[in-house]
Length: 415
Image 1: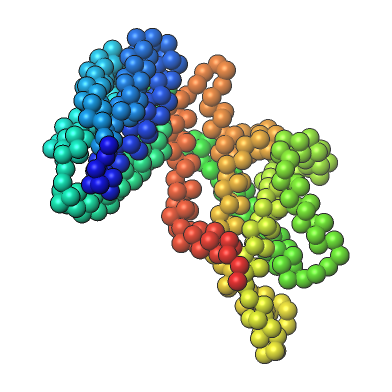
Image 2 (image 1 turned 180 degrees about the horizontal axis):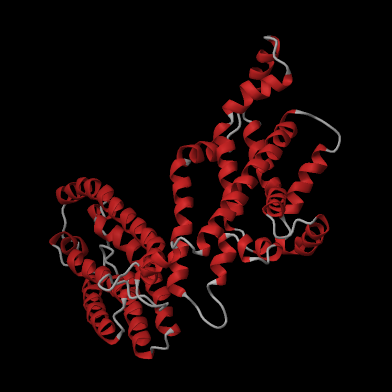
């Protein structure tokens, strides 16, 4: 039976292990699927055995009442360490195997370190006094935020790693000689031959870049010219068909874009807009219009009507109210809408492939896809061009970061 001190005091290490070990078991089960995909039966068996042992450690963590649980947890932790080392030696020792190895031995090592400490030993055996428990509670207050910060940083490091590893892999493919798709994330043999080939003066890349810039900028300007007045009208005026029109905008967003491919093609062919930037600008502007209108309307709804009424009393007409009062206040939302319109046109592939059959009118997505054919795949050139294409997008997000945060947050709160 627990004493009063044990009832009120639980070491922070035990509380932390109960959470971290549960996460480690789930992560190791997910990582075991890699051995299953690679058909590595020995590594898979060792991974499952170690994960099971780690789960047993979680189940038998000391509770301050049964002293034997600490001894069993220590033994199982040592077993996990041994199996983790065997698992790593039996694996291919790639970066993913190193990651899996860390998720096995670090939780086991923490269990050995913490469970063998005098604090946990005394608590699990029930030999702590009231004064000792008071000291332990004050110690928990110091350790809890520190361990919370460590856990948060571990999660953030994993999130950043998941994002950056594909980028490093593409960079390795782009910088490695030849056209080998499987990079080894090594820098010893890097070369810039693929970037030099893509950036040659007579390269088609510059034609694709020009076409994408014309189409994206044109789509952004035309989309704003259509979406800003429409969103303001939907936000401020009551007219017949208003609710039906807004519902139609939402309804259009529910259907996949491929169902409008054939009607779009027939319209563009009848208008003579195939193989032209104007045809793509018109198609992209109309496609992005519902989303842009809804985004801007949500922001216009948050602008107080009293500002407009005061401007009208001062002698402004409705256009002056919109141009001098509403539009300057709405610049963050307009900037976000412009950014999304630009990115939608910059990354679109299907319509650009359908409407353009000439290499001189290809946009960047279609041009990059042409580097990969059934007869050959220029993976190095493709990776280098992909990195170059992403640079304008990164720059735009850096420049519009302030407006992006303001625009996305302002439209979510009304009043």
